Length: 222
Image (cartoon, rainbow, N blue to C red; front, top):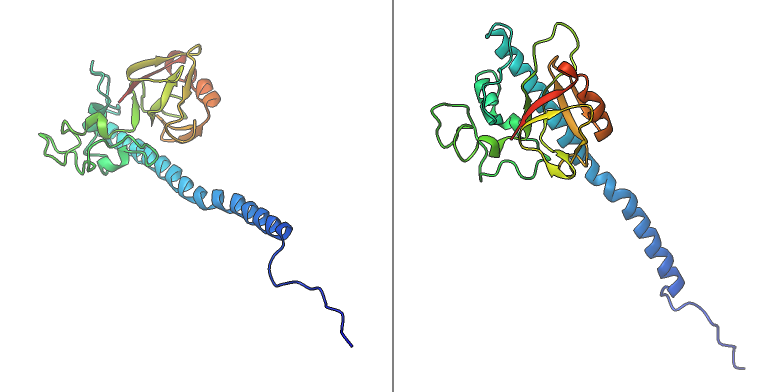
């Protein structure tokens, strides 16, 4: 007697099963990949905040050696010169570069020292200077007795109408300033004259502007 032929699986996947498996893999990748990249971004953000805290500490040490005053405006629009002045108190030129600033330093190797007259490894060398600087300097900053809203230093990715600001800039309540996309995903960090550091959105930045001297912030950007 001939037995009826059994119809069963051949051992492979059906088209529908392949679609389901592919969808699950895509879903997991969508969840896992951002999580894998986020720790690196967080570390870089923390590193930038640490840089600004060290800059604040360095300028406080500078002030202690100079009648309680930060580096004063000296009729130059070159931001790097203000950091060079406090070079003896800053730990290394490396803290002047934000890890999320892809355009700094422009030289193949970062500066290693604040020597002047400069050597090829000096921050003041022509290849470095503003080209190895990610932060602005606030020329209105004074050593405060209490909490201060005056900017001392901060990320250079300040823009008006998508144009990055350069050299001397005065920000007022009506200034439409914002963070550009070039660093921190349209956010930025500000180091204040009292030594504190705060991450800000563009809206928070505009609110902070009026906390400065005479309701404005006068900055010099690289």
